[in-house]
Length: 317
Image 1 (cartoon, rainbow, N blue to C red):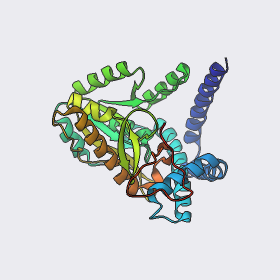
Image 2 (image 1 turned 45 degrees about the horizontal axis):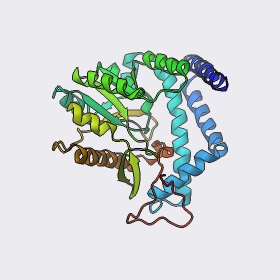
Image 3 (image 1 turned 60 degrees about the vertical axis):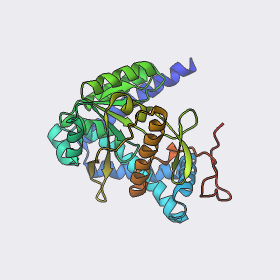
Image 4 (image 1 turned 120 degrees about the vertical axis):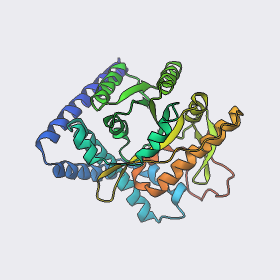
């Protein structure tokens, strides 16, 4: 009963939030909306102690030799600010025509995606919870690319259906990550038809996976993206919708990620998962205030960089 009620409240709250947000986008100046988002982000930074402390700790573990305490706090604050702005931009996307989105979010590096599609085996667009990842699939769909987005759907079925409905409104077709067998069947189908599967691949948590280095420490990375690329022969092309210094957005598509395809499956999966993680680290170093630093759980390790006294590390069980 409690789970049903929680799911129902979440669904109704989300629907109400989207409705109010779209109305606000239609009637209020954008600068007011972004100003409100910045205000709420500042309040959230003060109130969300768990988010603030865990994000700061993870930044200290990753970039502590480059940033002082004030810079780390500012990175966390700006990360939250950017997320709140992302939410406003979802409402803007829902209310925008295709030509408006093309003007608002220009594409850099489209030729890399086209070159990968020309190989005829589909493309895995590799991305992260960085910049405005919510609208990445939308921006590709506006250009006419056959694009599906892999999502970890909520446990509550009604809430999952509601989110799918809103993703469709912004031209995003969804593949649910569970059940796994059905997700793999659909992903294989999309890639076999030379379509695009967008995968957000930057959650490093406990469980099964591949141990890989990230910022000089060990994390557990999911092997799924590398395994899918090897099984299907699909190209893997990194892309992110990145916020610019003037707060405009730009979809940056990079060159195809070179993958090992030696036929030694386990070795190839591990090597390619390392390469995916290396791409993420390079990208996060460029835009540290645009990434969700809550996505890391570290392994205590014997890497070159020792764990400083007082720093917290998540040990895998």
